[in-house]
Image 1 (cartoon, rainbow, N blue to C red):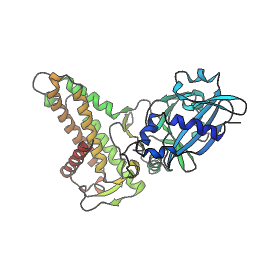
Image 2 (spheres, one colour):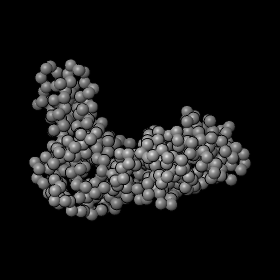
Image 3 (tube, rainbow, N blue to C red):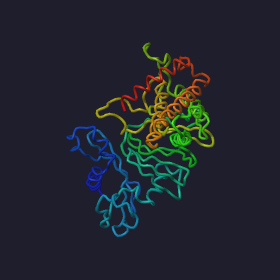
Image 4 (tube, rainbow, N blue to C red):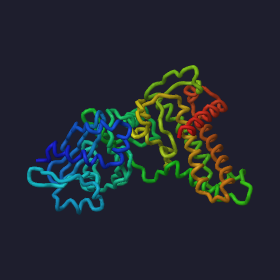
Length: 399
């Protein structure tokens, strides 16, 4: 027999209280809520030794998901290796004492989890855990599939899953293909999607471009004429990213419909379900072009006490996404300048600003050149650029 529900609850609660992602999420709430731990849901995924259970514990109305594994106490240390912090503690399984631990630290159990999350449709030989402190754990299977095992749960459908499924339905191809998702009793527990090993994060491309440009600047006078001539010039790629973004917005409009914006809105167009957290870490360059990921689904993003909708389910002007990406270009430029020696920082800053203007313009040109985008953004290029400039300034004052 597997460990009892009370045994799971007694082990999972203290474990959660040690996790940085749990503490980050609970920092939003009054301390009195912390005394309301309750076992809300339990599924024995694999009975025996080793065993695996999916455990949902609520704190107030906030659900948290922990995958618990167990083995004979004498075997578990060799399996866990350096992951001793994953240990939950000892309990009984009807045949004796076993050591319980976070199952994601166990390669055998983590590998088998893919079949569970995909209802048996997918299996793998190898798995690697990508460490992170966000509201999900990340696993890569055979370098072809990627799983998000959600730690902080949201009611199904989770915005990220809903967006990916609907975009696939309307034929948008510039995103990571969803393969399967694991749902139980009204909660989405995990998402499996394709993994592209050769994909390069947009932020890394931007930093490479900037480093090449800033490395060519010398003397007292910044060479502003070299902004478009650096070996790592990014403008053509950013223009293509603008085209991909325009296609994304048209697909979102088709998938979720459009709404009319107030007359006072500066975009002069319609409201769509936007990406919501659109920056250079969310876009990736592949051999086939740009792809979009990370649909603002992380519940840890937001201000304390914020009761607004999750980012991925928000309707707003499409210009909000454009402003997010434009502000991301500014942040990368500032990061590159900060890494320069003090002696060259002044001219580096001037070059970086010119780089930012060039790429922001290329991004907007690519976006506005997409056929049909005028239905969503009824502004000409100068007016759209000015509206985005104002939105970027707002972001600069709130971060």
